[in-house]
Image (cartoon, rainbow, N blue to C red; front, top):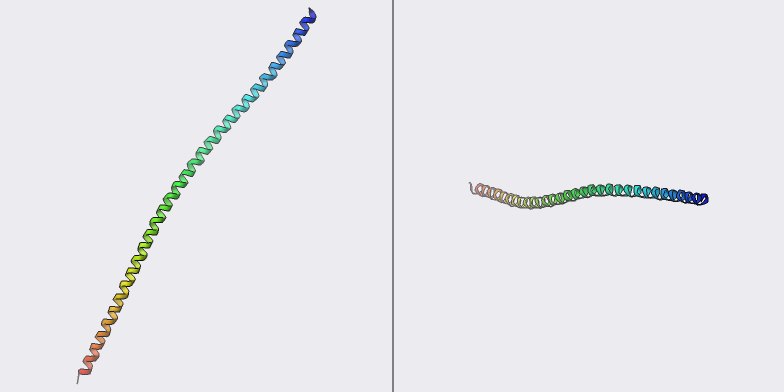
Length: 115
């Protein structure tokens, strides 16, 4: 009977040791799982922030491109307007030269008719 109790006590100790080992392993794995979940949540939050920043950058880029297109259109309109004004100035200068030449010819013609 004493031998039986000794074997039983040894088995109980072995069982307690095994349970203790399994409990420690379980708690370590659970702690690791908690850390992984926390890291994952932190990564998700970081990705959300980065996505928001990318969205802002994309929106800003679109606004900038729209403004550049508008500015380019305005520049083209100004170039066209400048070309038209240059042409008008050229026509006006020709008309002035023609008028001066006619006035000069009239003065010369008048001078040759004077006795």
